Image (cartoon, one colour):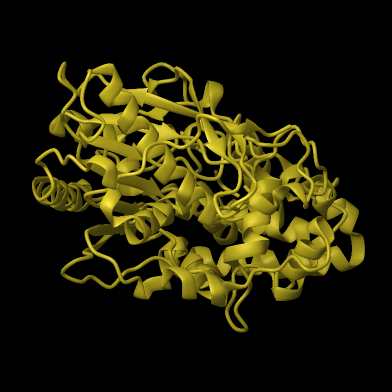
Length: 506
């Protein structure tokens, strides 16, 4: 999902920073996903925005709780053909409101393979919330484990829907393939791990499969992606801001348009995320050019960085300062729930605490483990903390024992250090190398603002690097679909959708 309560975006960036805020999370930034709107223009950005609904079980692990909630989803069938016997591409929507199926490179793949594209909204996000009030008690059903079972139930429900539409027997099975970016990329990999009989394979684009407690490699990658000059300017800016906070915190916060943030840690996290976003989403010049020029010309670095934060991060990317405010995150009926929801997943399951390394950090040393743990306790109450050991024990982390999963990462993306970067025969992993290749570049192109129709790669500094990896992805999809292409008649051996007689959450 940068990185604050918006992936909170892993994973809170969330789609569009660019498409994301509205279509799918930018990815684990832990800050509120951007709304998009005028920035991106709706025309052409989505394959469809027509909403559909299904009944979803609230608790997949209880033998006695049969409550349901309404889950929103989208379908795009233009490439599927009249007989509808071709593949079904399940695109996972992650940690933000899902307002349609984005018209990125997955659309190119769907056309090539004659596939339908379906996208269910993640439980609790957008319009798929089981509860009106997001108290900590009501958030107990928000987890990756519940979300994976949502996907499995949705997959069965939609297969039955296709069979019914086309008067086919209940045992007919289309070949399925799963896709996801960022936190949704992790879900894509985990779905193949936990439900290998329900998909021919998965693409985990920037898939953050490793839960990390102290994610110091995140900040280290920010410095590496920035380069020596820009990194030095960012570090000097951080040092001066830390000093100014001690003498006149209100004035320095006001300079950045963030005077409402009473907690210094919240403010410093905002500043760290602002720079991170440019490297994560392929626009490093947005921060590096003004800072390095200011340093060369003897201009005030803090004022220069403040202008970048106000004009680019807050105004252009439509980042809400309140999404960094712990008092706002405590609200159980917020205007934008994505930040509170993603932070709960961070605080209860995956951590990804983007803390400053002991040496040579870009972000302030005050953004540390204690800050994150205090936030979790302050916002959600005592006893809420991320047991990353159990999360990695359950899924395997980067030692995930699965097959037929493609992992892809951009070379400049700080989140890649929570992904599987070591390739193997059954799980190939590709690193897309270019100076603006970031989060989800294989599907989204670069830079990701404005939104790139069909994932256009022409503005990547090395389009060839992107296109080469895309060709490899296509080959894997082609091979794995062919290995389960013959329609399977599972008969009574496959469970049907079990939601007919269950009751809706009240």
